[in-house]
Length: 166
Image 1 (tube, rainbow, N blue to C red):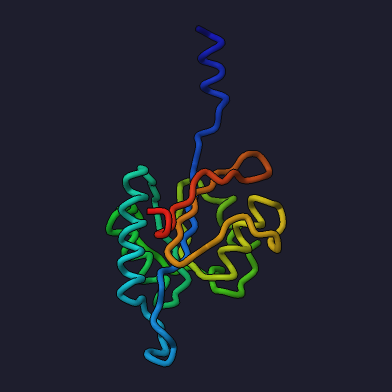
Image 2 (image 1 turned 90 degrees about the vertical axis):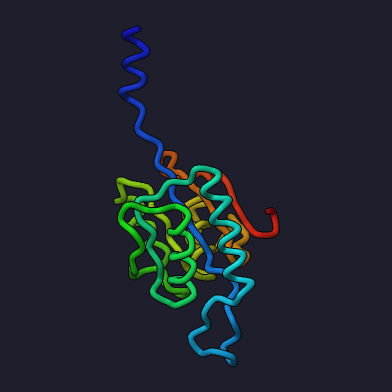
């Protein structure tokens, strides 16, 4: 019994993190702010329901501050109900250095969700999973949710939800 207790005490808690590419957005010619299209809203609702069914838990959802990412984050929050709500954070814009987001994740003590854009989401996943931001680890179609977990110095891909799979 003592051995079992020692094993339990030495294991760190498993904290999953989530990356989401915003849903499909309207054309810039229709609206320069590029909000989510009706299809994008439906796709995000679909993956948000699926993430909740997988019992995804997040304490906070961070987004880039760009309208389509903010709208995606709000839809995800309706289904996942993060304790700290939805917040804008720097470091999630399309061309931002993924090392900024990586540092935020490494400092996080609770599960968080990042909602952003290509190529940033793809580069962040590549950096964490493959150790190389230029080596794709996941295909981020619009409204894709990726769950990852730290495993020592590398990160493990746990699951992927995308509208095409649902």
